[in-house]
Length: 123
Image 1 (spheres, one colour):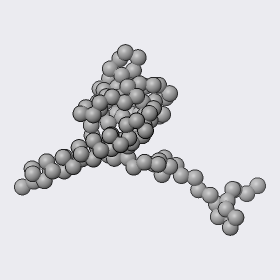
Image 2 (cartoon, helix red, strand yellow):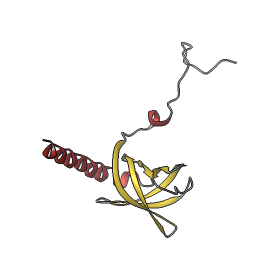
Image 3 (cartoon, rainbow, N blue to C red):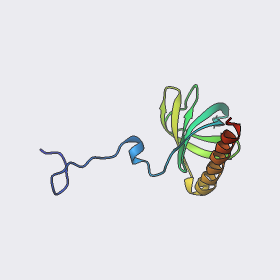
Image 4 (cartoon, helix red, strand yellow):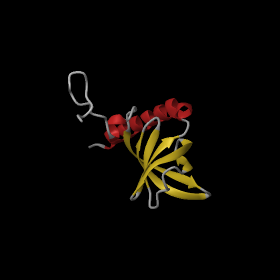
């Protein structure tokens, strides 16, 4: 039995991890809180896109958990934990279409303000 391929016999390579993401992820260092079953946990948001984020926290919730993510300076988003590992979890926004445009506009503004501060602080 041969590996699946194209009509020319070239093997089909399925994208994995970051390659299969539809949206650009921006590396960030933002503070937030994660609300899970009445418990509030401090998180650091390590990357962010219009449809999800990577959270760094001491005790990540289990895969499949539905929770509320509060991003300092932005507000609340309902999330679903898609991956949970040692000290981090990958989350998907449950209603990305409701937030994508405003979130990306806010994020772009935050990044521009950060770059302007860095230029002003440079000798």
